[in-house]
Amino acid sequence: MGIIAIVGRPNVGKSSIFNRLLGRREAIVDDFPGVTRDRLYGEMIWGGRRFYIVDTGGIMGDTADGHEVIMDRMAIQVQHALQESDGVVFVLDGRDGVAPMDFEIASMLRKGGRKVVVAVNKLDNPDRLDAAYEAASLGFQKVLPVSAAHNFNMGDILDEMVNFLPEEDSPQSEEDSQIPVALVGRPNTGKSSMLNALCGSERSLVSEIPGTTRDVVDSAVELDGTRYRFLDTAGLRRKSRISTDVEYYSTVRTYQAIDRCRVALVILDAAELVTDQDKRLIGHVLSRGRGLVIAVNKWDLVPKDDKAGDRIRGLLKDELPFASHAPMVFLSALTKRGVSKLGSCIAGVDQNRMRRISTSELNRLVREVLAFERMPGDDRGRHLKIYYCTQADGAPPAFVFFVNDEKLAAKPFERRLENIIRKMADFSGVPIRLFFRNRRENEARSQ
Image (cartoon, rainbow, N blue to C red; front, top):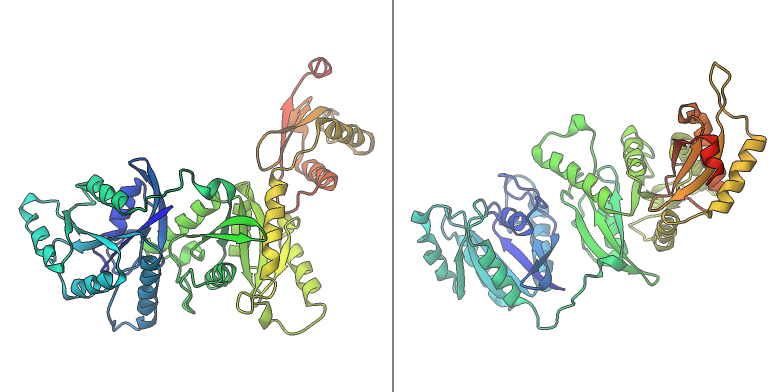
């Protein structure tokens, strides 16, 4: 599909235009300059054409706040977006007029050879439309006065985007054939480094400063013949440490990415294995019915020890008993050790989410449980009876047990049933849902 990049100085409204065009709040919008750092992709359909629009970090000059390195890397991200785009929407602030930095950006765009439309934003007052004429001094043929806040001329921008697209366009999205995978974890565990190692290029901004990634960044990658869409997310902090609206929305984006994925790759730091925040995050992944792979990153920093893997694997199972079924991979994004194992591991968990057990096998399970298990009961001497079981459609795997009284199905008994089901087929990395439904014995016999 074609790609259109949205570029400009910080705080001119690029993310607001991005959100308005998509019709949903996808990019983080804030009055603080430089909020968007990584490239952020969104899929559009307009005029019968399907394409991506890319919200980029603001291009900034030197700063005096000690973040010169990040600003330089932001400029690199913009350059990447320009290199892979078919056209550019160059956003100006209509209230400020044309700034010296705008002329520098215009020069860079002309050297890049991309088709450009200038969008003069924040012109929600008809008396300010003359500001669009000033933008003509930048030397581009097409200049549009727009207002993202008031949805003014957004359709005209989309018309120009479609004109930038190449003649041949794929009529179908490739996302249906891709496995969406969310890379999640605490700040500075190496999520962006992992994404770059998988992509073989600097796709996400990497820095030693915790919390560098704020938006969810999508990347399509093919590993061993299988296509994946990796969603790099912001590091999740404890709520008590979320100090700004920007960090709050980054957390929301991370949880949305978990909802979008089929498999979550939870990245732990080998130097600080499991924290309470990690436990909550892994619990959230499983509660949302997503597949789970645990990746222990920075393995190159662990002292050389033949039994280190077994020792840490045992520690993780003790700390995460509710996720003991999840596969664990020990790797280093820096040296790429173990990264090659991720593809097959993720694909296996994705297949497990859709695995089914035949009804005949399940009812053999019911007979074995009735024969050898002590059934739970209540104080009145009533015991649970299971008439039959079936697997519901969909993912993750869900099993429905028809019983005499669903209230008698105690939690310890549910865990025993789950363990028996896991022995019947490979459900590693996948949460299993158990449901109990009341059914009279004579009704059950008639089934």
